[in-house]
Length: 149
Image 1 (cartoon, one colour):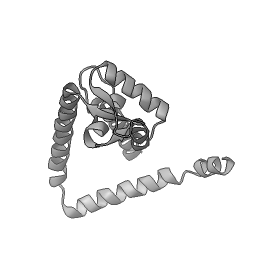
Image 2 (image 1 turned 120 degrees about the vertical axis):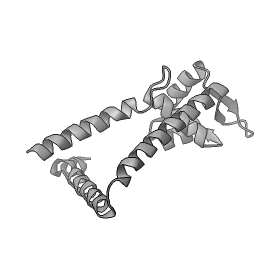
Image 3 (image 1 turned 60 degrees about the horizontal axis):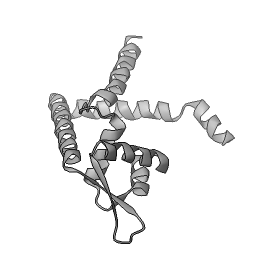
Image 4 (image 1 turned 180 degrees about the vertical axis):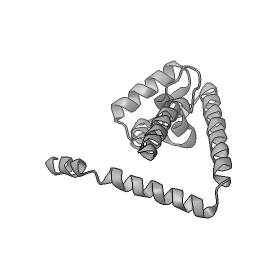
């Protein structure tokens, strides 16, 4: 069926976008997203970073070590002398700003595409997306996996 073929192509392109939407220096997407979280959060430590990014504390610690070595993030003792706070260096802030510009560009371009559709067409697209999500969320083998946990 042509619609399935086109839909699968669209999904592949979207997955590819995850890795190409933000190409900044020699950083990978995990490092960029970590810089974004640090830039958006004040009073951030590794535990909170891990929670926000949905990664382990060990993974968060490794990411921070890499970003500190690249001089993009700084660690400093908090007032309680127990936790280590995270903040961006000037170079890290520059990366954060580049990401922000790239994100705004993508949003503007998508808004231009969406503005060419009527409200009725947008409602149909949203309904379609929700229906597809319903298929993905209700795959019978997923509920069997949950039963075994």
